[in-house]
Image: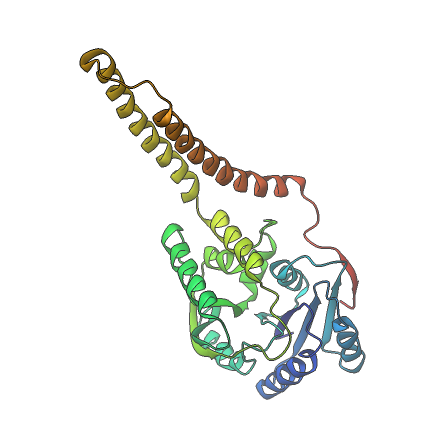
Length: 306
């Protein structure tokens, strides 16, 4: 098998046939042996029925049907686990990423690169808020991590088999694949493209999921939030010490003081707020450690033809 294409799907009934036609056309044009691995991530529409119908007609179509929705990154991970190709492509089913770019990415690999990812020049059909927050997140993440995670990229990429084999041995439950792939290393490069708006259906990444995804990325590849807790502790302790010295000086030297509770309440609220932030940050890390310790299956397969 030359190329395995991993396509995570969630409520993509309007895009299944189109993504299949365009991927098949590209692969046939490249004259390679290929498989298309569709992962149905607990869709509520008839996405899996359409995929199974394609599988009965085309031997290159494979599918993995989850028992429920496990999330985009887990769906991609399942495809990585099952892929047989010497190269593996990750692409979403919404057609925002053009399948036709795969040929350029594959040609780039022939120059000796193990990973070629697609870098967005423009992003159509997305709100200014999403564009601004995404831009800010990727740049903050690049600053606070010890590894070089490329900005303005998604999961659309092609990887050599050796990268895929390393990914399969990484047991994290909270996946942030683009960070993991950067952490692995090897020679990596990119091709640029203009990202289209979604062909049909609704995005599977509303704001709540984007926030969770951002937390997974930060907690998986940076200890800076934990270090910030320590810094906040020193800062608060410093100011508390200054206030304590001033209070003692006013009480015993100047003998000018006003009995009251305002300053006391403000101090308690300030310190309490810092403590709550600290507990919350530590809790995020402990939650992820707890998930790994429980060691439950990353996903549950209801049906597959692999």
